[in-house]
Length: 82
Image (cartoon, rainbow, N blue to C red; front, side, top):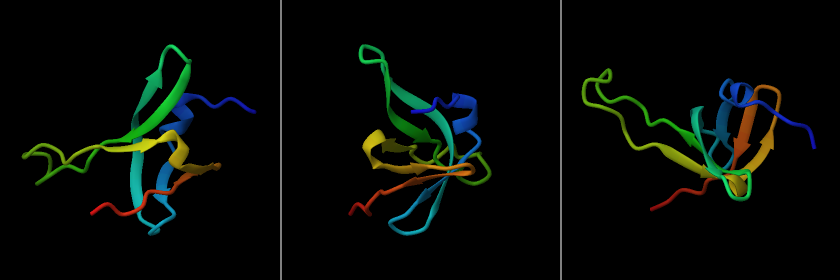
């Protein structure tokens, strides 16, 4: 298993293979410090009205939903909710 830097992860587009939608770039990681592993990727929600009205909710992608981490893209499978 090869290692990857957080800075490299943050430069990759995240795409949902369930609907082909681009979700954005990684803004943060959720970590399990006791186990020493990443539990989820976090993508910042899009800005509302040019950022004047804040942001929409962040998208949290659980680690098991990641299908593939490639050169330029991270493929995830998130089924539509609701």
